[in-house]
Image 1 (cartoon, rainbow, N blue to C red):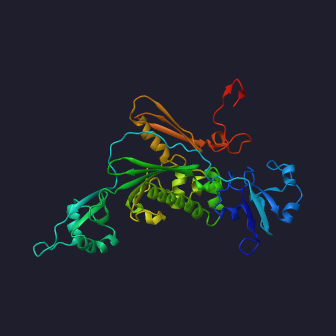
Image 2: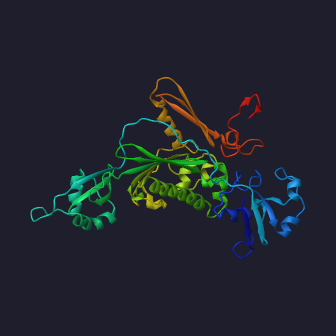
Image 3: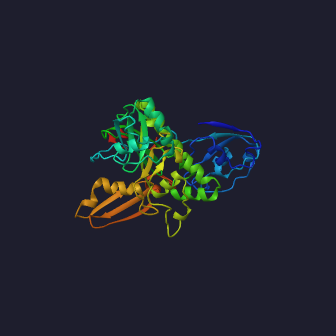
Length: 407
């Protein structure tokens, strides 16, 4: 258990204790988002005379015995004096996240790399450097002004031997020498509760490594509605929740770089799945309108977004894309499940069920697929219920009976 000393100075005076603790990157548990309903942000006040001397106010989440011992809800304390606070528990390092799986697909990456030895200019061939590059790339354009400004320098320094990273529409990188073997992508699943990423060699399709973590937004609420409320009730709420996702993705990229001895700058494509709200929050798009009828999203697909625009710490012109989003609560994760199980190619009816914090169901075949969503988290992840918890340390996942009794 962590013990935190908080000095009541100008920076913190009058602040909500939970909000202040959140600024310390402690990954606090607050499933209800700080509404005083779940009791999970309980702390023990070790020093704080006025907080400790307040009379017991009867409620459903703190017993009178706990109150007498100094237990309080962090979301219900306004900092007005020096406090010494003992934290009960945090999320860090607690979750068991399933990342194993198998899927077979043909290799056709969005970004490809190829090495070229280009004809040097002479009196008979006075083409511009951009024309020279675009001709060997079958007419694919160099659209980025930074690449154009550096082009002549790169060509001359490397004796007109360069490697191009390109899509069907645009050359996104021009590198000196032969670097075609260094071409990586990242498949990202941004879930409400967990985040998982797979590092992929785009030349071979090989999965090199997996990273998983708790979604750091959980301290602002277990469910998407609590997080939407936070963005609407706090001036910089959306920016904060967006930055948490970007920071976690950057931690993932650093892990892959260190663990698999690659350069982050050689990751050229990040492809996302996730529910509609998570994808919106990542890019900083407003989500308030999704919470109420008619539940319309701002967009249904990310296209041609560059990593630098989102603050993602990889090659700055790397593409960030998503599978299409279907509706306010049916996102790219549902579409990826439909695609992976092949139900859209079958004549027989299939039922696909995705049980997560958001639960989705898809029913249909090659002619038509209908989908719906609901909040499955309370039932399956222990939210807002007296008995139960998520798949974290301390949860019972196996029961055995032998001659010695129950284990």
